[in-house]
Length: 358
Image 1 (tube, rainbow, N blue to C red):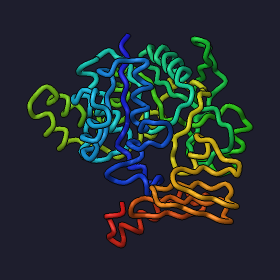
Image 2 (image 1 turned 60 degrees about the horizontal axis):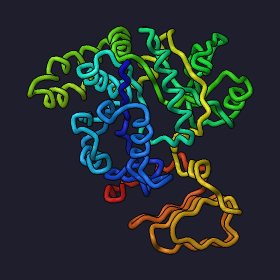
Image 3 (image 1 turned 90 degrees about the vertical axis):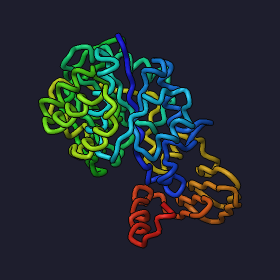
Image 4 (image 1 turned 45 degrees about the vertical axis):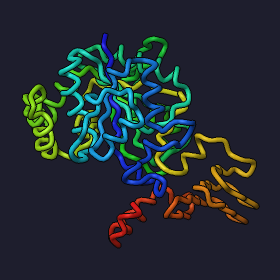
């Protein structure tokens, strides 16, 4: 059984601005540990497959950066999207390229910028998901058991249909649900059969190709045009011209929400999607006042803050629940409850034509 992995690495990580920038987004930054997030993701997957079986989908801006950060990754395994088109076209493009090289493989699709504490537990669950995906109609996803009523994640509702495979529960999926409000999220937590949508998927290459053909025929036809050029000198040119024609749609909406043979494996392995600055409180040790501090800082009477210095001393006195991040050309100060809205600042910068700060 051949396993291939697809890492989705085209995002801009805008909620981690001003540290995450257009030319150096979050996945290429050292957020936790001593490696960048994508280097950690590669290292994690190499415990299961060799580097030749790992593919990264990104955009033209980051192809060279990938070669610097992951020099042992074959250049042919860097799949460049001409434009961003959400996760369905990303998965579709990766599937035809992998199908050419590893036609019978089982494909693991994973974001580039997630934190996973228990890597051994993660690999064991992925192997179980691969086993479940061997039935040619099965699609598998990992669901994170919620520990609090999070409103920033989508959820997966499971049915009462449960199997035990390799020591793990495997639940039939009832439906995917959008990000809830706090009251709804609390009810999901209490119900016990709702899981955070991790965005990690496992399926056989030929299975996802078949579902794309049935459920996203327009995208399938465009992919087939690309397939005819994969082994020719016109490959890059055809991908560049055809890819932008694909619908801008998520794999959840395009496929997962419309299929009955979907299974979720509930997981507890210390997962975080590191979506915004407040994630640092969940993946780092806090000081005695509940702060996360990094770099040259001096804090007195400072509580529950996230403070990161780029070298210049940041001195705080008598503040609570703030995010303070200093970079070479930008200093961000905002309340933690606005962490999910940092994109509004970027929108305003674009309106003011201050792209140099993006």
